Image 1 (cartoon, rainbow, N blue to C red):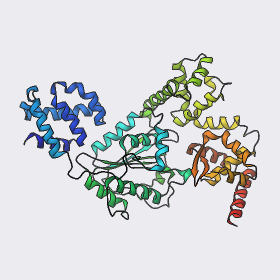
Image 2 (spheres, helix red, strand yellow):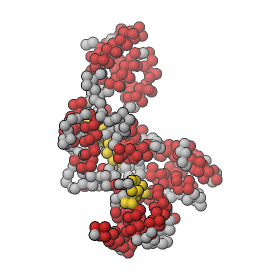
Image 3 (cartoon, one colour):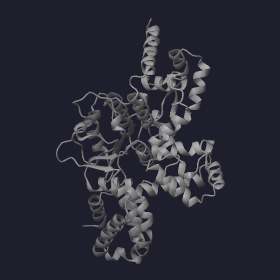
Image 4 (cartoon, one colour):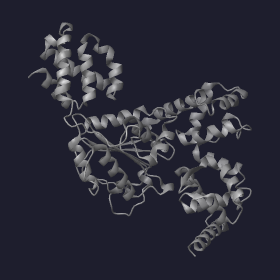
Length: 479
């Protein structure tokens, strides 16, 4: 066997992409420096140090034994020549796969651009998640990998970060925007695959057919990873596979999924025997320390780097003579490993909402934070006020609606509604729909909190009144 075929075979055995093979080849060009390159190789190969050493070690050992004259420093020149020939012969596809997207356009769907950019803006940590997933796709020919975690643990951010770095096809199920139906998912993913891999005459093809076509176009070592966020928010009839995902997968096709926990009786994703499946539960005890480390890294990032909050946070802790270490440790503990808690607490501290509290008096956990804010806004003292009515209208409607519509339902002045929306702005998502600014509840955890309030006080007149007002408003519109 000549050395070109040797390297081609070894690349296939180790499932290396052309780029990864070129990286290893660069190390072989200067064999005496190979150990010094392992840190860089770790980054470029997107795998653990142990895997890098193992792959590099195995290939270099076989290479040295099989081609001793090339492994020597004197053989480097000849090796470079063969390297060029190898690259031309084996790693330049005769018909390169080029996406039809314009070079200056986004690699992911327009409807998810702002979400992805927001999620990755202050992203920190989660290396253990990416390493575990990388190990899964390295060890399995295809499969489904699911990240499980409670609301606010950063699942959407993990997907956004992966998609931004790997430019993977993606879909984010968003309950409050009604972007959570199988037909919307299939249309979006289908179009992404058709555009990215140039699949002519495939508009009517189903997802399994599209995946099979893509698998045929994948070059040596290349994989297709499709990322889907928030399976728990999918709205779909019972009895069908979730999002109509395939029960079988072609080789080198993987799905990266996220969802909140569910009871075993509510499992909605089925696969055929033999299809690799794995789960990473962020709540698992073995990840406690990793979660805490990531939370602390995020707190330090905001405290030292975030231009929006760092100065006011520092002023808050300095007036209380709190050290940075104490602040990081105490807040990490209070967060209960929930990033959404920090997303709310940082601006609350910066705004002065907690100027009357010490560090130890800050709320413990996300639900206590919501309840604390509920009380501070006077919701318990004055039930039935406009503020509460507006929130319950948003909860009951469940879709983005404009300020004008909220004012019409509640039969009050639009300016009064706008003031309420401004006071709860951090809990709401503003977006343009048909040229109008519309509002929805921002996060599923706050949605759950409001629903719990409704369930605890199911007999209160406010709920009946809100639903009656909504019904009357809609009837007027239809008339």
